[in-house]
Image (cartoon, rainbow, N blue to C red):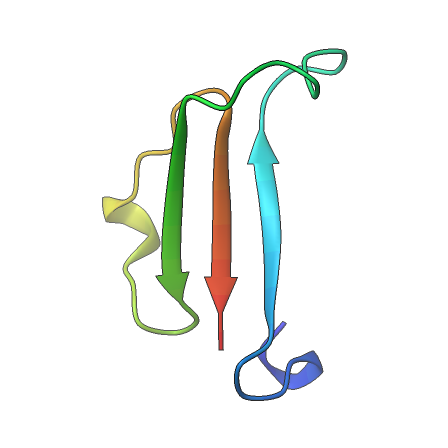
Length: 53
């Protein structure tokens, strides 16, 4: 994704089951692209993940 984003741009992912998109979020996680270890991240259900460049 890094090559598709300009500095300051971001993309978002939502972890949840199909049909639960309208339910309240239980958490939010903001990450900088290429500045995290994917093996150390836990993303609970109904969490919005924002990855920024």
